[in-house]
Amino acid sequence: MSADHRPLRTDTALVHGGSMRSGFGETSEALFLTQSFVYDSAEQAEARFKGDDDGFIYSRFSNPTVRMLEERLIALEGEGAEGLDCRVTASGMAAVTAAMLCYLSAGDHVVASRALFGSCRYVVEELLPRFGVETTIIDGRDLDTWKAARRPNTKVFFLETPSNPTLEVIDLQAVADIAHDGGALLFVDNVFATPLYQRPMQFGADVVIYSATKHMDGQGRCLAGVVLAKAGWIADHLHTFMRQTGPSASPFNAWTILKSLETFALRVDRQTDTAAALAERLAAHAGVTRVFYPHRADHPDHGIATRQMARGGTLIAFEVGQSKADAFAFLNKLEIVKISNNLGDAKSLITHPSTTTHQRLEEEDRLALGIKANLLRLSVGLEHAEDLWDDLSGALS
Image (cartoon, rainbow, N blue to C red; front, side, top):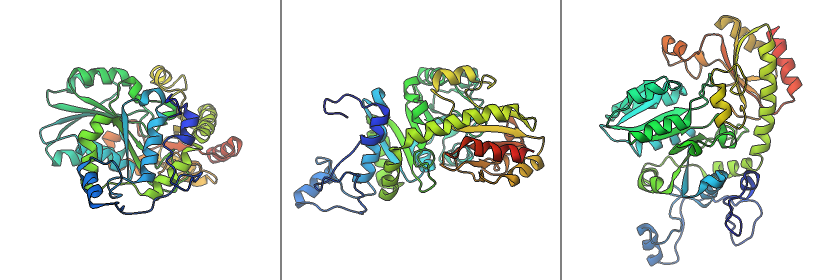
């Protein structure tokens, strides 16, 4: 916050949000690589453990560097940040799992969109049922299915939008309204859009989750996850769960991402400029049979995407030829674009979802999601657009 407590604009929040200087007055945020902390007195130690003194105790509970990152991510929400809190976890999947397990109990019910990252499908379909949590998987774009699946014991609606890998876009406000009408909360994985282009809480979401491993780090160096929610929900559910179970973020990783956030908007805007241009060129190429990009007019959910996303993002999905062999031949000809299952990196990365991120799904389930054998997911990096096009078009030829 600025001196008069006005919310900082995004570019400023990404540089200054959450800064906490030590007595040395350092310019760059300090890296507190410490497991524990010492106390001025036995009375102070007692007060901290009782919660009467909000100083630090142990880095599994909280850490100054990690807390700076959490505060900066809250500030990134801008005018929507009032009353929010944040916890940073060891990975994006730690964020998903902690957010679910801290809130759900045996006998509860979850409704989830079928278009989820493979590991998220595992949590919903395999992990939660082991603990007595019932789950229902639906077509998230069909609003009637959310209504039909809702039960008296439904506590969570869970979705990602745009989805991985086919970039389906779900109407957040409509789903939030259905959830709240039945007393459930809406959990949203917002990793593809990033908080720069979509802020789900403005459309009614209650809990927003990120893999900071992706665009927030953006340079392929470290893992972290993020859970944002109202401070009361964090205090009542997530805080104690994380303190006792330990999916804690490394202070070094938190510091790395703090520094990355200073260039977050610059990187993602540049990557999105290139992605939008490449999507147009790919769509016009004879070797590409279909392109999915949220802000293209031919995207099935274009109207929703332009209403709730400021821009189309850094990811493109497209189909090459007719078969897995066609897709593999294309991948193996690429030189600049690297084959990798990561995304949001400074380097352009491409993956074949049906044999990597979504290989655990049955073929019938993959096809229902539009994940064909010739589908590829491209994460556009910071290379020059013409070099990327030369690489893609050369491989297509």
